[in-house]
Length: 456
View 1 (cartoon, rainbow, N blue to C red):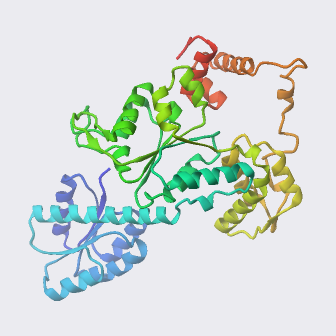
View 2: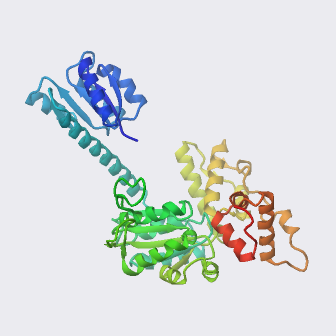
View 3: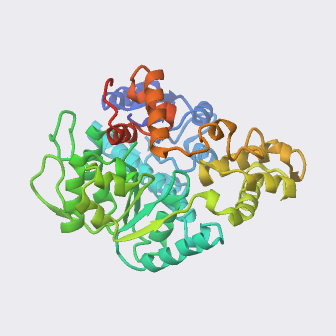
């Protein structure tokens, strides 16, 4: 969508000329006849650029610029005036104007100036975003927990961070695999380079290739300009490939080439581009089983798993529950301006009694809800609702599934998949939703258990 521009000009004819001129270039235009009438528009809308006259009744251009700094401080301002002089130009630039132009001007002159101002504004926003990203960089110190298996994770991550080695992080959903990847990146020699993340399961197969490798102009319908892919954008930094187990087989060979030859080819190009990128991959699936079943290339697996790190599930980190609880309690209390300072022993025991199938992500959500519900300065059992309850670690319905003589876990999983398919009328998308897995994971498990693909 094209940027929105506000034109503030007391001369109706000039205001209309500018509006028509810039509208023809595709910009969305609002107008105001003076600074006083422009202010409510600036409070209501998000503008990429403000073009204002200097000499106006009620509120002139200089005064308007001063007020804009409080409302939209990063918006670039172009000042237009018929009273062109060195003095007014200097005054406008001192007040933060992007540039200054005098009447009369031709169309090409204003078009070039508008384009430059919008690019400058976009760059300022990007820089502000990057500064924010730097402030929230994850480090190994941000990983919370002192349990033995977490200490092992810290040791491995600290050792590999100083290298350029490819890393494969395994673990259940919600264990903090991306947080660990960011920590490794920011503890590495590539810390000043970008950290680019992409989820291989969330992007359709038809788009994933262009997202990763980029494309040249004319590579396909709608490719009206060249675009670099995520691999190129991660130059001198780290590319994090989340849910690598869901990467289509057709793209695995191309990724293997990146790891082997350190080069890529954009879609629609025959020219190889060298890349200097570290790859950290992650998966919540059993990637060894994917290799054995032919769903994942063994040569790519060996390239990715040069240095494997396993993130333990929260149920195996019982000693870390108090640390996590206090961390999230303090964080959410500060964010919400609440006076919650501690957690009762009973509430802490309740948190420790739960198995946390959603791991740290689920724990974080429960703590956020609990802080919202807490009315005093101590978080109590009643605040943890409708969260984990004692005795919920092994639901009664699961107990009934296990007979005295035992049962095959594969048979239970196969039965659940068949039941989900039956309930959904063999709709794989809906069945995957019922089982809370991706469609690719469902299809892999159907193939594993020999369940026929009866529906789409």
